Image 1 (cartoon, one colour):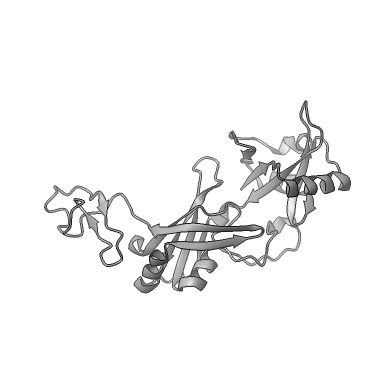
Image 2 (tube, rainbow, N blue to C red; image 1 turned 180 degrees about the vertical axis):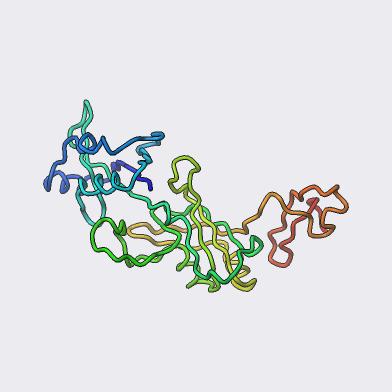
Length: 249
């Protein structure tokens, strides 16, 4: 499990911050739950920080200390120069990085697409929640996630995955979708772009073939290149072959 804290300086966010301050200032909330936190690593990004707690109770304690405003979680934190600064908290459940839509279908990398620029709050898929409190972690229960979005557009989705940082386990902003049939796969890569909507995020992202590094040449199966992996891939929908050279076959 992982969380992401972020500050925003836009006019809309500033107005939201004012509403949050007026509801319930939370001073030193992080200190009150610090006994439940043992950070493996803290990574500071531009206007954001990611933290990886070791147990779920720490995440639950943090979320209970937050204030909800327009379906977003905020925690008021202070610094030597700013007091009670509302910081948006985005929890991430590690299990939401993978979602299997059809377990009966084997995953074929040659029918898998790479989706770049995926909004970080977007999950691989939606799982039914049996709780109504914050432990369910879904602030947008009716939102379509990556697997369902791609399945509605092209059909045949059997798996979706969100790429995460190997250490921090937080989404990197990219994903993979595997299809059960060639027709759906071709339709997805032919479209090249897809519109992803999640909450107040509406983003046009790129879709392209997912290519593994360790594949043999489709023409010679390694016989003409000393069984070395082929470094080239032809993304033309009439070809889609891995090649040992960049020229035409």
